Image (cartoon, rainbow over all chains, first blue to last red; front, side):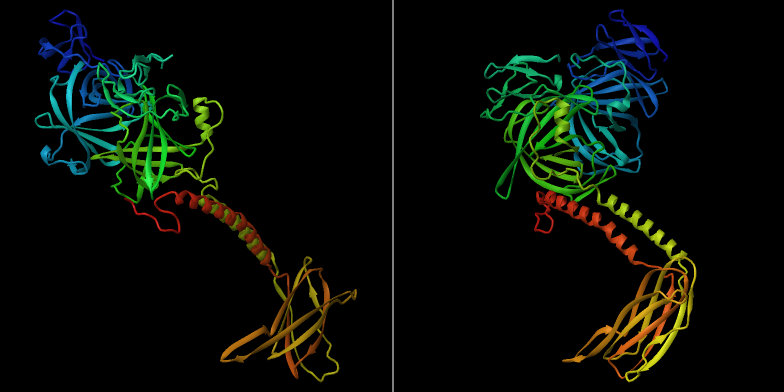
Length: 211
Length: 422
C-alpha cells in the first residue's frame, strides 16, 4: 500500500496518506482537518469530536468484498436522530475506493456511481416510488434526514460537521441498494449490497470488552 | 463478565444495567415501570407504566445464547398483543444483541419459538400481499394484525412505549417466516426460522424444560415432512414395481395351447367333452382357461378336469356362467356375463387333456374353450401398488391434518370463511 508520509502543520504529528484518492485527512492527535494542496497540507480547522458508538470497525480494519481485500482508511459518522451510523472509507489496495456502511451490526458495501438520468427533485419523492438509475429500477425504501457528526482518517472530499442532509435509501434489483445524498450538489449516488458480517472476514476490529 | 454499564433508575433508584452499548436508545426499569432515555445524559423519564410483577421473561435479561456459533445476549423483552374476533392473544419478543453481528429477535408464542433478523435484501412484496417469492422460497400470507406493545423490560434500540402499535403481516414458508412491520410510513422486514423449544433451552443453557407447545406454530415445520418427497418415493417404488412387472411380462411365453369349440343340446345324454391332448412346455407355470358361450338369459355349469395324459392325475374344478338381461320399468339391466376365465397356478409341463361336463339351463349352447400357457399376471402388481400407496395416504392425512391446524390459526383457515388481508 503506497503511503505518503507528511506531518501535521498544526501539531507536527505524522500524518499518513494511504490512498491517493484522499483529499483530506484528520490528524489523529490534534484532530486538525488537513487538506492536500499539491505537496503541502493546509489546516482547515479542528474536526468535531465523534460520538462514542458501539462500532467494532476502526481505522486499519481489513476485510474482503467480492474477493478483493480492503483497508478502512477513513470514516464519516452520521446521526439520524435515533442513533448514529458510520460510512467507513475503504481503500482496495490503492486500485479503487469504496464505502462500508455500518450500523448496529448491519453492513453494506457500496461504491459511488454516476448515472445518465437526471435525478428527480427531493420534494417529489416518497417511499414506494420508483427511480431509474442507469436504466435499472430502484424503489424508495425511506427518506431520512441526517446530520454529519464528523470524521476521522482519510476522506475523499471535504465534510462539514453539523451539516444537515437528506438521504434517500432505495432497493434495487438482485438485492442491491442505492443511496442518494441530496445534501451534495448535484446529489451523489452510491450503489452497493448488504453483506453479512462473516462474509466480510473483518480483521483488526476494535476489542469489545466482555465479547 | 461483560462490560455492562450500571446506573440508578432516575425514577426509583433501582440498579439498572446497560448491555447494548451505545445502541441502546431507551431502557425500561423492571422495578418501577419507567422508560428512560438512554441517550440523555440525565436519563430522563420518557414514560411510565404500571408494572406487572408477574411477567418475568423466561430467558432472564443478560443471559447469552449461542445460535450457529454466535453468542447473543438477551437485552430487551417485550410483550405484544393482538385482538382477533374480540379475543386477545399475546406473545413475547426478546431483543438479542451481539456487538459484531447486531440484533436478532427471538419470539415465543404458546411454546413456539422463532429467531428473526433483518431481511436482507429487502423483500419486494407490495403490501398488503397474499404472498410471493423471496430468496428462492414461496411465502404465503398467514396473518395481518394490529399489534400493541403491552409490556416492556430492558433495553431497546428505539424509544419504546407501552401502547405503541404497528401493523404486523406474517408470511410463512415453514420453517421460515417473513414478517413486515409497519408503523406509519416506515416498514421493517424481518426473516426468521422456527426453533425447537429444546434448541432455545440448550442455546441459553436454561434450567428445567421449555414450556409445552400448544397447537401448531405459524412456521412450525410439518412433522409429516414434505408431501412432494413422499410422492417422489412412491413414484420411484411404483416405477420399480412396474419395471419388474414389465420384465415378468416379457419373460412369459403367453402361448395359446388349445382353441376348440362345441355345440351341445340340453337333451344330449353324453355331455362330457374331452379335448385333444395338448403339450405344455417350459417351466411350471400357470394355465388360463377361458370359456365363451352364447348363453342368453340362461346359465350353465362346467365341471372341468385338467388331466395329465400320461400319469392320469386330474385337477378338477367347476365354473359357472350365467348371463341375464332385460328391461324393467323402462330401465335396462344385465347380470353376469356369457364368458368365464379361470387361472390355474403351478401347472407342471407335460401332455394334458381337458375334460368338460357342462350342465345346462338352456335348450342348446355353443361354447369355445381357449387355453393359454404362461400368462402374465397383473394382480400382484396392483396389490403392490396399493400397498405402496398405504403410507402415502397415511402420510397425506397426517400432513393435511397438521396443515389444517396451522392454517386454522391464520386469516385463511382451510375449508372455512377466512378474513381477507387487512
